[in-house]
Image (cartoon, rainbow, N blue to C red):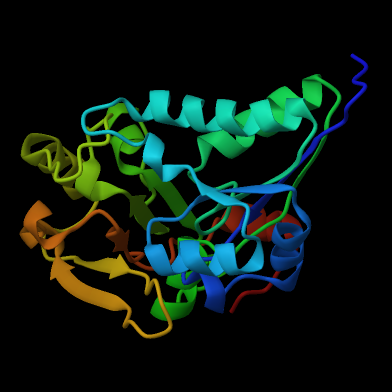
Amino acid sequence: MTNQIKGSLVVVGTGISVSGQMTLVTMNHIKQADIVYVAIPNKPGMEFVKSLNPNTHSLTDLYEQDKPRAHTYKEMMQRIVEKVETGFNVCAAFYGHPGVFVDPSHDAIAYLKTQGFKVLMEPGISAEDCLFADLGIDPATYGCQSYEATQFLLRKHTVNPYMTQIIWQAFSVGEFTSATAFSNQNAFALLLDKLLNYYPASHKAIIYEARTSPLFATNIEFCALNKLRIEKLNAVSTIVIPSLGLPDYDLSIIEKLGINIL
């Protein structure tokens, strides 16, 4: 497809604390864009982006109580795409990393590629990056399994308890709309039961919440797995389940490699 007017899209991540974690590359893209669309869940972050480019508009107005999130994400994607197709150089800035838990960014890029537009995604600091730093976890030590809570519950995932487990969006497990105060007690109980198939009841889990501003503190709370309750969580809580330790060596592989581990 040939376009007489050629727009473009750059998708960037603002980091979790936005101004404190935004890269110079991201700031440059925001400044140079004809129009900026932003999905950031706090006003200071939005205002910081506006200070870089006054022609900045929020995408979060598309969220509505009890509206399916899939519909909201589709509308975000359409709003971005329409401006690119009109010929604007658009920058879409998403909280954290723009490719992590961000359907509109992937959908917009995939569609615009098929239409011949120039597209680019720049990385950002995600909640997982903050988690590794704040909890002192190296994912290379034990390995790491990471899931969105509802997908983890609905699918037949097999947990490896020797790996670190990260369960995202546990507060809204079983929820498919934008209900702001939602908590599904039954779904959370089922989630907990699934985890307890792999761990002792007393195994310590971590409730983690990354700081959203350099002025705020990171929230880290330890809790026995069988004492974990949804009332302890909020919309930004992540459940981390530490490894049970390293599994035994595969002696047959070690023998074939001729390695002496003693």
